[in-house]
Amino acid sequence: MATVVLSAASAERPALQRLAAVLAAELERTGETDVRTFDLAKTKLAYCQGEFDCWVRTPGLCRAHDAEQEIVQALHDADRLVMLDEITFGGHSYTVKRAQDRIICLISPFFEKRAALTHHEARYERMPSLFKLGWMPRVDPAAARTWSELADANAVNLFSPHVGAAAVDDAGRERWPEEVRTLLASTATPGANIVSRGPLREALMAAAAGEPSGRRPEAPRTAALVVGSAKAKGLSVSQNLASALSARLRAAGVTTRIHAAIEFLHEEPARSAAKAVAEADLLVLVTPLYVDAFPALATSALEHIAAARRESAAAAQCAAIVNCGFPEPEHTRTALRVARHFASAAGYGWAGGLPLGGGGAIDAATPLDEQHGPARHVQQALDSAASCLARGAAVAAEAVERMAASPMPDAVYRFIGDMGWRYQVYQNGLTQSALRARPLD
Image (cartoon, rainbow, N blue to C red; front, side, top):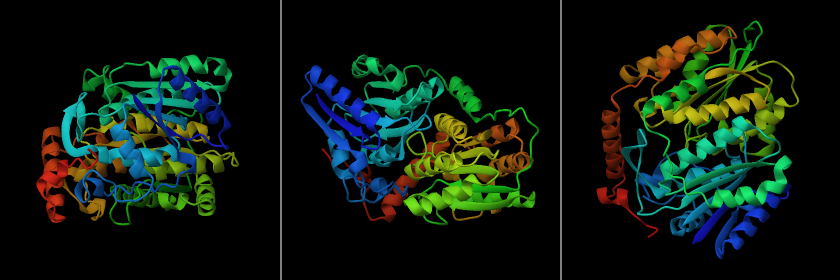
């Protein structure tokens, strides 16, 4: 059995180095000799730019030429993928997320319904089982639960035959070998506990709901909006949403500033941007959904902002808008839990989240308030949410419900989406059969 390990272990993360040694010992104990480890902390990788070229320009291959090409080939050939990381707000760190975001070339762009929701079709006949081994310095049951749910959602999307997740901490270090052993032996089927859409909707609404602070709301004077998309200006639905929300907050008397996630890529500019965000009375993360969580760049931004907030005791609120390309907003449930964990870790009050399904129906190039049809419920949700946030209150349940409304029947969205992929590949001068290419076979 071939195993690939994507590891964030480094000298800066000595606990992960110790955990990596335990993992290696347990793999050896089971007789595994074909293990390939990618030390991502030492590997220079580009981040996913969200342009979907790996589906419509170079089908099945990422256009960036770096170590990710070796990673995806290794995953294609492997029976098992183990992701070793520090649990970061219930999800992955930037170090691992860079690599994870770019494995979408292993699946097809076409839509199908599985596990009660829309997902992409398979590109290859077989994919590796997925196991996530996460470390945290101390016990955090809520973050551990999110880590496990994220593993299951990722495994459903990746067509993994089996899935397992383990969250370990320093207090239970003597149990690490047993927990790793149990993880590697997992034969759980991804999505086995998803029997209908109803419970997913309940989980979404629970994640999106704001948490009462127990104090009288104070109207924010300043707001920082962080756009999580890596796309260029004018090409991002998230940027369009941020601009529309910013205009509403300004109309209510709040001074706003929009930050692009790219500002948090390099250390010095990142510290400066994080300091500016940390000093605002309100932070709103406006981001697309990448592999059931936030893009690597957005994750980097949150890591830097959390660090900057440790130097500031000022009370502030945090909210999130998560834009999903699938028609069902329920896909954003785990990402919104990650946002809640971030808010807690960074000392923010959680003001709630707005889950947008069918984000592909929003035109990125046309200002949101100039659009009609599928954009109408989004405009109404932002009207309501901005009114709440400008008063220092949590986002109203009405705003969450409006944003989560379906712009069209799910089956219609899937059909239009599939036609969109076919049209794009035609525009790029490729044959329709290229969309299903298997370059790694």
